[in-house]
Image (cartoon, rainbow, N blue to C red; front, side, top):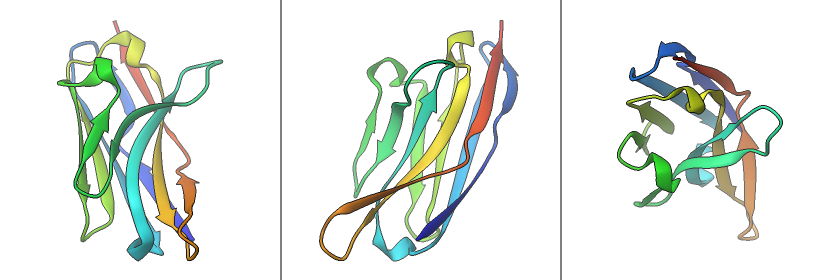
Length: 119
């Protein structure tokens, strides 16, 4: 299993920046990918950015303003969010995908951290 601890959420004004951090512990040697998702009220969770083995991918509209960084040695992932807009207000979740013994993927979710962008 993997335990995830998130930090860095909060309130920021539009145009400001915020950095989310997530630290994984436990079976970190089996981590395949680390990612951030977000959930708007009444909506399904959606991918923000993912850092796989040497590659990153972003939700199209966030490229250039959000940056995901993964520290393989420390099993941490951060999400730097610049030029924030009120529509970015959501609960952000750290996600870790573990490779299982049979080659499958097991996904773990953090508890979520609220990001609120005021206009």
